[in-house]
Length: 206
Image (tube, rainbow, N blue to C red; front, side, top):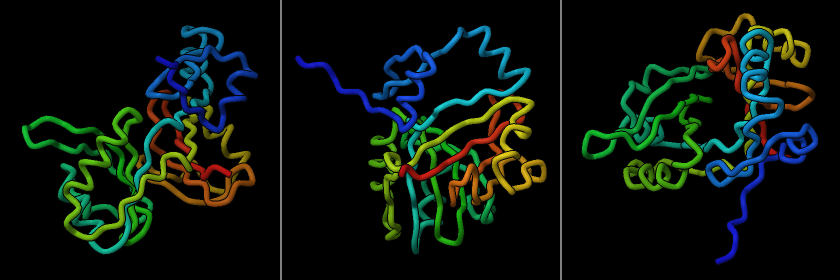
């Protein structure tokens, strides 16, 4: 049997250049640590750390029936969302268990982004499509999106130098789309929790 070829995020070469210890995770070659767990924990809790979480899955649900579909497959009330608001939820299965937990972003009317766990992307897609009797347009955009989590008490100080978005004004579990580090249409989400406060940044791969 041949070896399985691991996927690589857009930041793979940077991880190697910085001396990251690379391991397999959810089918990706990912850095598990750089200088050591204790050191990195303290840096994030006291300063700021950046995590490559581009292995996470992103599923776009658009068009007529998008709200109805997401309302059917998740447990929280999606109708309460407004453009720029994020909701944490889960997809239950037929027997009282959970298919996956996820974040739901409302981009605009009939335009949603679902962020799911890396190892469950195909399972989640299959589940969503199984229940898509509403004609919504469901697209797996995971391979075209990179995701960085910037966590820690100094995360705002670091990121604010790179954007005109007023990060301090962002409420928890909201997001804004704007320019960040000269990259247009970056989705900046105030959903970080590893080292509060924190942000998650979605950009399209070039």
